[in-house]
Length: 309
Image (cartoon, rainbow, N blue to C red; front, side):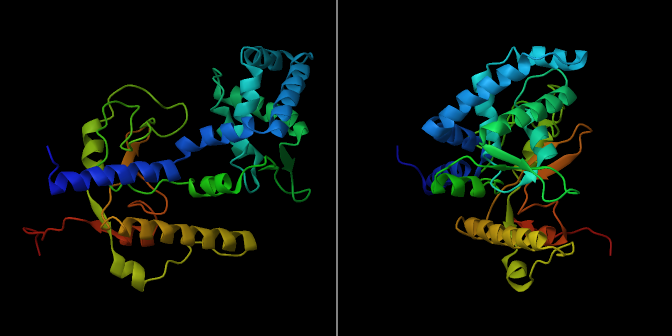
């Protein structure tokens, strides 16, 4: 049976949404990075070197609490651990704070204690830095440690990493949330509870999240075209100025993307551990700064009546 026009339009939007997620979602990028790393003889040698370094590190004697952490480390596949560390650090195309990277990487280890995981990852990164797959450095004596990747990647993959930092809103109706580990997006699931270690299977009012996810929105193009977004902080360093210019350019890309699909979209939502709801979005969000809030309006407008004057 042939599709009706409306059904066909929805089908095309689903295809478009799938393509957008594959282009911009970080959920899809790790496998592409792994494939690139494992396809490189240079990186495979660094993986082998990393395993040797970790084994030497684990064979030494340390104080009691560190030995307990190393015992947990010994339960892991060291080759897979090195690959996971390299994969995570490959995202650091520009220098990033060592503490932040270690915290992010800790989620890749299944340790019983979050603090222990971060400490162990930091030590593992210090060992694997000797492979020259990445650098740990500081600009000067008073600066914080930073991490930057030295992993050779194809230009196309680097561009993919740069594009996939933040997902834009959805151009088709979000998928129905059926449990606490699900997503309105079509190609991946995720915890609906914000914060590492906060996930649970208790009641988080999925019906409310589904209702908010299905509220169709649109950009206020007249506002965006007539008012320039300005920073909410001082551009007192070259780095801040460059980051702001990049943020504005990325915003323009997503504005243009949504305009290709009738300028209608949906934001997805999550809750924190206290049950407060947060819209998921960075360049386009109902909970961003004043400019971001003003640039979004309801797609279906109705005249408000019965309001006291």
